[in-house]
Image (tube, rainbow, N blue to C red):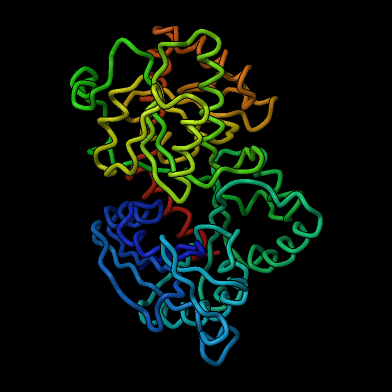
Length: 409
């Protein structure tokens, strides 16, 4: 049996039925004949609660409190908010959760612990779990914090668990590879390539464009951009590694000012910043061309991808190989645009292109490419070809290889 650990801090109750990366990994592994359990750290329960996900695997909410260890519930009371629960001093919850996790792992007779992110309060004490079971850590991107004090804190808190991990999984991200080697001392021999986002091919495939446009009320004469995203509060400044749909609006506005009156934007997204995002669109005078659908049922997204000309991913990338929306759009034959993480990143990408976050430059580049139908068609063909790398079958096979190597190391 393979156990997959969701290392996010906030135990969003609604997420138990979402189709997260880890839920898709569980599905991929089950198709290969394995059993999977996803553990979610929770400060909203006193005892482990067990659910069956719609994909068929087990999901367990494991308490992140322990009355006698380091995180007594009396001192760290949960505070309810719209998405679940939160608290203060979350770093204190890691050891208690680890103890509770290991009890569940013993019951479930797990063979490998897969941590979805080591930038988490729950990864820091993973070296304790590694005393009992093989541990793998999945790197989700980015470098260490910029501030010296924060860098030192994260570095020294996660190094023991990185050292104890049998493998560190990451995609084709050159800057992250350098960070792991030079900043965190993770040798290249311990790094294992793995595409984090994966797709269910029977769901995500291209539909008839005109029918999809008619169904959604999208004008085929326009240049239609789709954005599928979580909507956070508006950031104080642009951070390339964070989702920023507000900056996307700025760039689209730049394209409109450059003459792109034919551009329409459709946003399928939700989040704590949704109302603020609506106000921002209104303030920028963009409400007539930016249409906000809100949260869209996941299985309905192929209709939205197929009805539009381009997906815009509102965060900075080195390559167009990150994010569920990116590969879902690829599978539907649609090209993708995103911000450049650095100005030196290549504009032209397989399956799409990158633009500057500066509204004037980014807007001009966006408009110029939208007005080249043959260019978008070719990028769409590239996208469709690339999507074969992100299937359930490919992910299941790769995870099997990594887990086998980790369990015998």
